[in-house]
Length: 124
Image 1 (cartoon, rainbow, N blue to C red):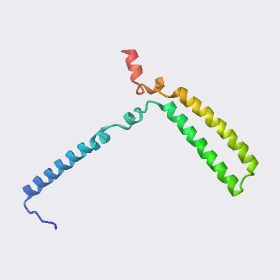
Image 2 (cartoon, one colour):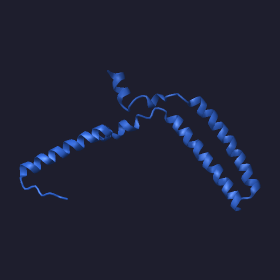
Image 3 (cartoon, rainbow, N blue to C red):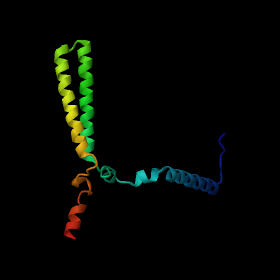
Image 4 (cartoon, one colour):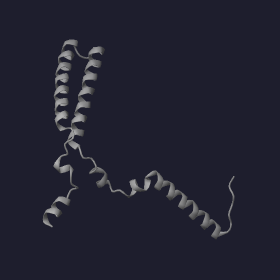
């Protein structure tokens, strides 16, 4: 049920009260922090970019392995060729796992600073 409020001061008071409630609720949910944070700050919070890239490669290879098996099952590729390619993919997966193991926990030097800040610190 909607109630019409004719008094402009009462409307203003109710509006400000509702606005304060909305701002308080958004602050409790962390929305204000997300809105106030610049896109550049969000990008530079990733500290393990090289590791992330390697994990993405790993997932890409797993997808290739899956589709190779699907293609072989459906008859789009000969079973022998698909098995050979799947063996190559498996070797690549093992190599990627070894690379990931050595990269894990390492922060790339370029990932530690926001672009431009390193130059200012060196000059000052």
